[in-house]
Length: 198
Picture 1 (tube, rainbow, N blue to C red):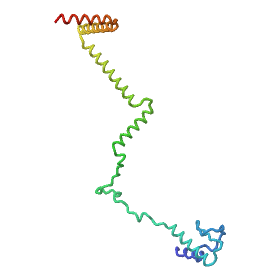
Picture 2 (picture 1 turned 30 degrees about the vertical axis):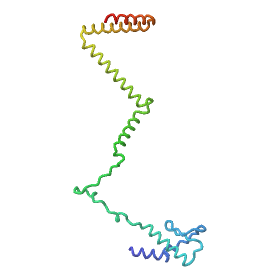
Picture 3 (picture 1 turned 180 degrees about the vertical axis):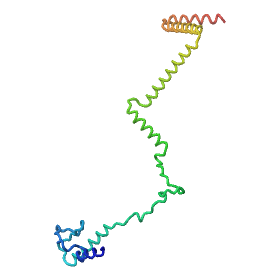
Picture 4 (picture 1 turned 180 degrees about the horizontal axis):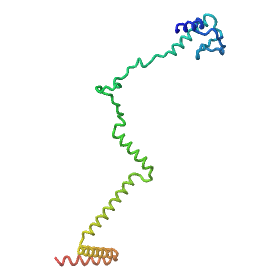
């Protein structure tokens, strides 16, 4: 049956391999020989043997284009797809840039900044404020612990010590605010008493 079909097709087709029943269409002026689907376009000036050669070459070219080789037969298939446990399967290579510590740290910092959002304070100012806060908290804790550990006698001694310190500061301030002739007079008294004491 297949042979009969091929023979019938050959009878229908002419020597050039184009159906003879359908009349050739008029191509636009200056058009080259082209094959679209099953139609072959021939330039208007082509006649006789030249026309037949053009048609034959166009049909041969289209057959070559339509019969693309099966690339699957040419390419080798990897053996590790068979699932053989004895074979060593290839590992994906690491990107040296992404594997570097500096890149990972930069990526981590960028993610943190993205999550935190844009802040108005620079990083240095935030760190300094954090340190101040921690120092104040430590001082308060130490003061609270000191108050809890001290006995009432120690607390009374501490109060008296603070009063004495305040009195000394007041005396120093009065001496600084005193007129200059009083300071000179006190200096003279000190110098006059020192040589006599020796």
